[in-house]
Length: 301
Image (tube, rainbow, N blue to C red):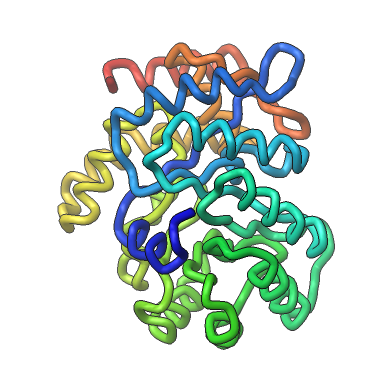
């Protein structure tokens, strides 16, 4: 296991991959398909893999499946940090974090609990309990029903040495800037909006130097080209890629709720990998929409 402080430095500025979770024709996790996809992606180095996350349909996986995804990723890319999605209620999240650690994970991305709103002190207690349950690095995902303030993060960072990261998917730049200013180098900061490249330049101004890329799943060369330009401050290249690829992709993604995942999985299938369908309640793209995706990615490696 990579030490939490070492993982924090490894992911501080590099691009993070957000792999899909493949399912077979019986809607079961397909370990061989994940291994093949990750081996292909390994030709394009990234700072780490966040498996069984949002793009990886963590919300549709059983705890046993999440552990199996971690084990498969660890065997397919033994040199890469493996960060796994983790979530649900506090007791389940703590047990899942421990199982991920035993399976060889290097860290967890703590996704929001679901359905029920919770008071701020309850969210803080939930995060603290999960941090205390594992030796692995913990990254808090600020999104949905689980939102933190700068003061909350500061208290948690004081109490939990293994809390090493803050990922934001709310779009609340005010909170992001308050967190990055207050916490400085104590945490790594990761942009986590759907298709975050659309927001990366704005988040950079708020102190977030990197992000996780879902489109890396099927256009890794394009994703890395954008990230290199982003890191170099080459806004002209970023804007060209936004115009020619990312906004046309977003137009397909925005046709139906949940397509932020479904469109990525379609892209993986169009690359020739057995990704399978998304699990309900998500829905797959139509044939017309898949044809639009095929036209968009033609010639992109």
